[in-house]
Amino acid sequence: MARGEWGRLDRMRTREAVWGEDAVAGLGPGAGPDPSSFSFDSDDAAVETAEEAKEPAEADITELCRDMFSKMATYLTGELTATSEDYKLLENMNKLTSLKYLEMKDIAINISRNLKDLNQKYAGLQPYLDQINVIEEQVAALEQAAYKLDAYSKKLEAKYKKLEKR
Image: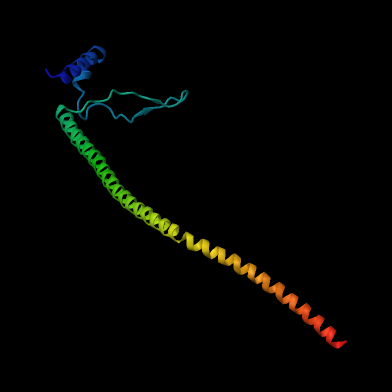
């Protein structure tokens, strides 16, 4: 006997011992009272009459198991496919990110090279910039001397006119 049949036989023996053979013989699809029947007592609250659940026929169980395994396989296949697609997406994103970082690295190298070139050119221009600063200081000193000379010449002219009027 198959494993499931032994459990079924044990349950049938238990039923025979409790309810008798007639009760067990009547168990099958469509046998027994309506499970939704209730009995009401005027003194107590509603009391539900219990009835033992009926097992589906062996062919039904086999078909239900096949259906369950088929649906479970479909579900697991879908889950694994979704996970696989997620990993493929992550892999593609990593590849694109890696390429982007390589481009950024090249740009940074070019910027560094251009900065070094500019620093060298600035260092080459530094003596000329220093000369320009010296000339600018000399021009400022010459301008101050010109203002002093202008002020002195105005004083001198005023004295000359004053002496001339006398």
